[in-house]
Length: 420
Image 1 (cartoon, rainbow, N blue to C red):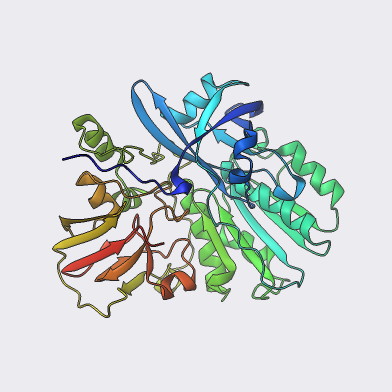
Image 2: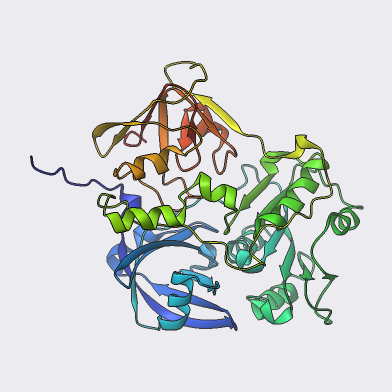
């Protein structure tokens, strides 16, 4: 029987782009500026804070990694992303140690919906919370929001170990000088008490209480963006929810995975095992897990609240064909690349992981609920997502789910990747 050709979504294809410039940001972080071939320029049009997904082949193994863009589309800047060295990180260390100006990488077109453009013309005050390299997409948002409306304001909380770790330090200071009345930075330094800090130690609820004491924190035109280690973001999110800020006004993107999330995405050791066994079909061998490697990256509990109501609400969704009773899953049926397949189902494991484990090729990229590459329509059955991730109300209304996060909760779950 002739093997059916793999039909990739246009957003999942890879294109060659060249490193135009390499910039040493700090001792352990490097920025790469990219030049896109003329024939692909339109494909690489981007919006603020999107990311690029690269494919690497290192020592006969393929890796897939996503890195956020710090560049600003309103300035017509070339695509720029920043990579921070991770202890024992295969790809980050490879990029920092070996990539140079003139090298060509394989990249998918920009993706991601972290930044949500306002739906009205009223000025906004953006409160941004960055931890370490989490500044990368937020830097894109800073430049875009300051340029797009002369009445917008931006306040940035930026957490680092010490002043020498601050990525984009000079560029940020230049923006403060240029937009004195509209842009300010609160530097949080966890391991230093130099003159460059505003808060010393880790960011805590008491710091946020003091800062927002004279501000109308629930103002509908106050928008909150969080990016960094999970513990850092949890502290901020819990504070905001406790203060009755609407969830729709809080957006977050994580670069890190907790151990519980790893079981809810693709466990790195599991992917490696599948690769060695050769049981993944073409197009599905690209692992995108960024492992927990350092103490700084591991989530830390700095949350002063104990009210369970402030935790992220899970998503429970039934298919287009009606409600389904909760039951031990038995079958997952999926339409992938115009092929209807069926596999045995397991409870508490995301649909995407189960399909990959069975050797099929569903589309995916970030594996953290941030990019929508794995979006599918839930036709039949019932699923649960511990967090809604990047899904909007419109997605849920259309029974669209993130299969990297969605776990089956009915006898049969049927999803369609093709008709998106």
